[in-house]
Structures are given as C-alpha cells and as structure tokens.
Image (cartoon, rainbow, N blue to C red):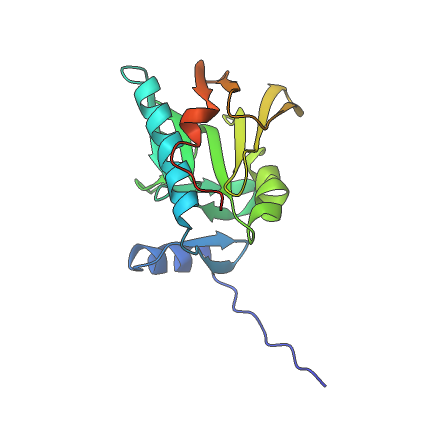
Length: 191
C-alpha cells in the first residue's frame, strides 16, 4: 500500500516571508511553494535576447521591462510567479503593502522548457488572462524555431499567430514594437 504524504499548505504571508530571505526563487500556487528551476543556456539566451530587444526598442517610452527576477501577483488565482520577460506600463502598480511585487503587466513572455511548457500554455496562461492590464503573451520554444503569439482583441477574445521561420518578424501590438526572429534566436544552438 502506498501512503500519500500530506502536502504543506502555506499562507501568502508565510510564502513572502520565506521568499524574501531565500537564495532561490519560488513560485506560489494556491498555497504551495514551488522552486523555480534553473534554465538551460538556450533558455537564458532567448530570454536575454528578448529582454534586450524590447528594452532598447522601448527606450524613452513609458514602460518598464523586467527579466526573470521580478515577482508578479495574480490575486484571482492566488499565484506569485516570475515571468521570463514582462513589460509593464508606468506607473508600476504593486500589490498592496508591497514594493517588490508587480500587478499590472501588459505583455508577458515565457521561454518554454520540457518541464513547464504545458503549464505555461494552459494553467499559467489562464491565470495571466485574469489580469485586467494583460494584453499580449509570447511562448518561445528553446528547442526549435517556434513562437506562439497571443494578442487580446477584446474581453475574453484572443488572436493567435504562430511563427516558425527565422526570416519572419512579429509585431507586439501592445507596445508597438516589431521583433525579427533572427534577432530573437541569435546565437542559439539547437543541437
């Protein structure tokens, strides 16, 4: 007979106290504290490329761009998470009582890994869609040239576009910025 171990449930206050003092990042999903695992070189390069392209493309405009270490609060789903890349319109809006947890992203990008791709496409995207300011979502594959682009057209309606060739470019409507896939996948080794 196999015994199931009881899973520890934490309050958001316990999570935040733990997270502030932790050397490693953790997501918080409805009471569970989940370690955020390290990425592969491709994962880190793609996230870095995207961050750089957006950051320099938005220079002088009223946006802030964050990469991997900025915590996001999704109250409707009781989730704290760290998107790979996140764009926020100024002024930054923070979770009440916090100055380190964002609540108003307009664009989020995740670089897919084998262990998180289904969660990123399904449950995480559903949670992100509950954020009123959220308008655009990118899912970038690190194992092949593949970008899934979702853009909100109106309440509860999203337009999907897929990119699979380096010579393509994608337009991020929420921030009026075009990105070349050759730049996004620069120096990526698929072997």
